Image 1 (tube, rainbow, N blue to C red):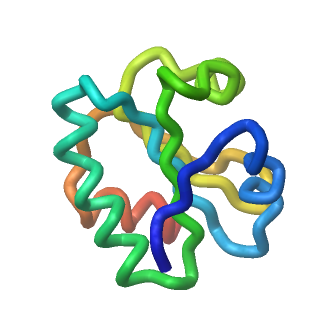
Image 2 (cartoon, rainbow, N blue to C red):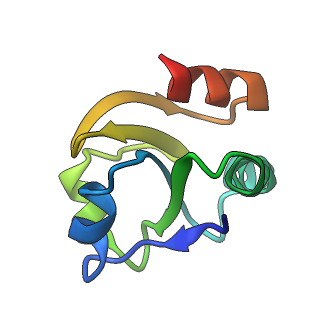
Length: 102
């Protein structure tokens, strides 16, 4: 499954997915975000049981504000429309997968 570009227009559909959702809040100018991005892409490709989305905080400030994003990259895990886990900063793949499995 490929990564979904999340916007305020499609956010409710993503949030209400039956799958566990991983959201990657990022910006193009952010170095650590560029390190996390290929890991998030890999997780999306290898784990079709998850819905993986990326949110550009510069283009979607309302969503960033709704999640209280103050530092990026920020990863958020949603289950049944509610945030159940989050982390700020670059993380290795095993830590990101562990966030999804908790």
